[in-house]
Image 1: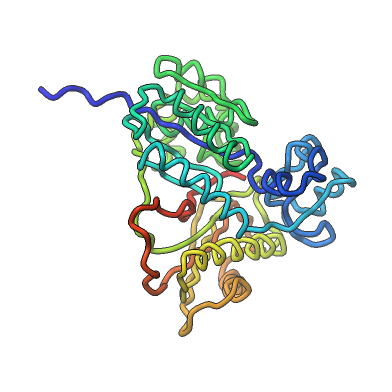
Image 2 (image 1 turned 90 degrees about the horizontal axis):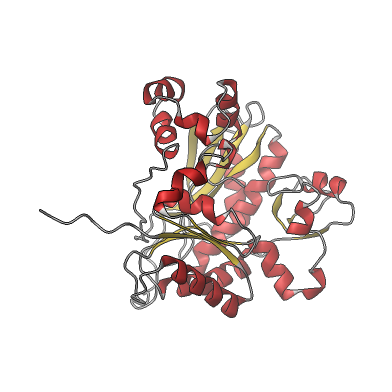
Length: 369
């Protein structure tokens, strides 16, 4: 009889207000002042990141910069520099791979690590998380929050529990005590629309969701009902999946509120195009195909794709293609909860070093911003 596999030890690392933190590190005069990384407040741009001083005024990622200015007239606004953020995330990436090769990166500032068996032969995931946080701070001057648990779902929630610069450890026997009091909007994968549906059903907390049967949840939410049933019991069997050769480069965001105004979507897509094109070129690749992903308020998801005869040569070209694809959707007539851009159809990259870890930023999964 085979022995049971060891209890998994998962760490979720989430950099604190990453873009804003990088800017404040490089420009000390910004520290202690409300700051938004985004477009000009007299435009239709949206906030990419807000620092904690700005968040005290109710400003958050995805909010229009004009609204952010109304809430805090003395707030500072600076444009994002994705090339710089990618360089910093590369430093963080190398640190993570010093501890384990089982690293699943979700975005420039977020990753899961499986440290059940690790390169330091350290049996304590808590000590590993502390060391990673210390190494990141020493190398970059930036703070990270970490969650430690036996699965990815709980680790992610834990990393958000004690921000900024926090460390939250949830032992297996404490999982239900930890998640039962949580409002469901805090659960990854549950956005405003699902949360509203759950509220109409009288379900507001994880503890109330735990009382519902699988049959009931599948009747109300289809296949998503199984996910809700499992997370209400702290169950998440997903493995940490390390990098593999990528077929596309992309970024997508779930907005804090459903967006009907097409202008706001265009501003997001402009920044998104810059982000993915910068990363693509940073790895020496060129692409010919642009894919636009849209998820409407009712969770209907559609994609629109265009392939050019020539390689795309600029972020502006990517953005223009995305704009044309957006015209083939119902955006502007139907509220949108998620949007994203992916680039594909690229030639073989230049020779890569076999000793270094893979790039940090792969196509991101849905993430509430």
